[in-house]
Length: 266
Image 1 (tube, rainbow, N blue to C red):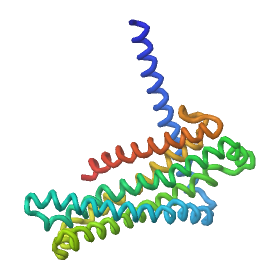
Image 2 (cartoon, one colour; image 1 turned 120 degrees about the vertical axis):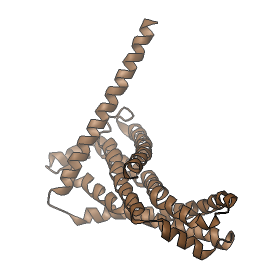
Image 3 (cartoon, rainbow, N blue to C red; image 1 turned 135 degrees about the vertical axis):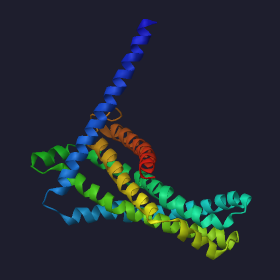
């Protein structure tokens, strides 16, 4: 009995030390990435390539997801509001839901699954094949060469993708609410115009920027330190495990960050 109790404390201590170490390592990683972003020289070609990869190539899945999210909100919102005779508030409900919550969060989750996983796998493979060590041997800062363009590109791309998500989601809700369910077109857009204010747009922008930092911070750092991660290791299997871990960890961090930012800015 005593031995089992001691093993339980040992497990909890090992778990706590590992995650404290992981948090500190990610914090130092992001500090070095930010410094590499600020310090010259600046090269535009890697940044443009990363904006194309993270932003432009994610546009289709963002538009697709946004359209069906807006349609679902239109259906669910209509049948909920119709019970109280408040169908005219449907535009307000869809606009606020998308701008404040669903737009930034679902955009970040989609980018995590499409681009974040690829970033983690790419950097993890470079670490396993000693390409990052080769950069350091040639006096090339891997943070300046690899991480900084991805961080800046994510910060630029996430708010724009979230804006596309919001616009397409509002149009998707309109297609269901007005032609299909018979909601008045003027009431749909007027309710949205009156309820969505600049504070709501500001909250969505802050969330998008924070989620961009979370995605790059977690996915890139887990790939960069693939040998030190409990889920990682050498070889293709280690990279695959750490990539899965990065996607899960990033998704959870996005949801937790969404709550914290909402609680602070409300």
